[in-house]
Amino acid sequence: MLKLEKLTRKFGENIAVGNATIEIPDGQMVGIIGRSGAGKSTLLRLLNRLIDPSEGQILFGDTDIAQLSGKELRAWRSDCAMIFQQFNLVGRLDVITNVLTGRLHTIPTWRSMAQVFTPRERAFAIQALDRLGMAHTALQKAETLSGGQQQRVAIARALAQEPKILLADEPIASLDPMNAKIVMDALRDINKQDGITVICNLHTLDTARQYCDRIIGMQDGRIVFDGTPDLLTTAMAREIYGAEAHEAFNEAATSTSIPAAQPVRELA
Image (cartoon, rainbow, N blue to C red; front, side):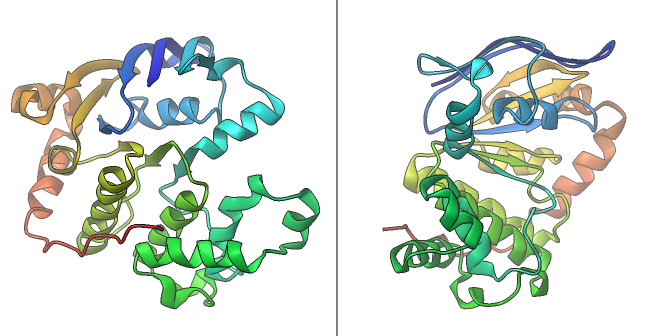
């Protein structure tokens, strides 16, 4: 279980995340919603320890993630994989090498620097790509792929880490509706098939309601809603989104007619 206790992050006088206290059971799919600047991305970066908390605790089991450093912190970042809005792939490298970077924590430093991977490691990467329907692109340079394809490669890279938690920071914000559907279907299937906890920042209300077991609403750095999708009333959603409510509801309406994508295949 992941547990936050009064987790706070300040930037000068500005409170980006304030007194966040929640418990997330293993295997849950959680959507975090809110207007731009509500603290959603900061919260995920705190969980992954890309930034340090000002106050509070991040507990995973008996371990306080907020206190980790060095080797233990690197191990946590492997267990808590991160998917970014802008993919963070190395464009000049081929797809399989990008996926294999998810295995760097498991191999000696000299091999990671030289990008030397065993046949077994390469087979593992191909399996991860195959789950996302991307095995056929393994030898292409990442920069030749479309945005939706690059995001699927980024998910395969995260899977290659064999994480316990998967964080996704606005993973569909820069994608067209069809690719957004494919990516969200992939995240949901990974959550259901593998039992991996998925915590996903989402801008549109309909996407959160459709895919997530639980929705957390943030406003001005604070959690103002925490419950199942059926408990999130339209009035509460409008309060969470504030001035961006019209945009969030309009985007939600455009996503409902997208045909379903094929489910990802289980990684052996």
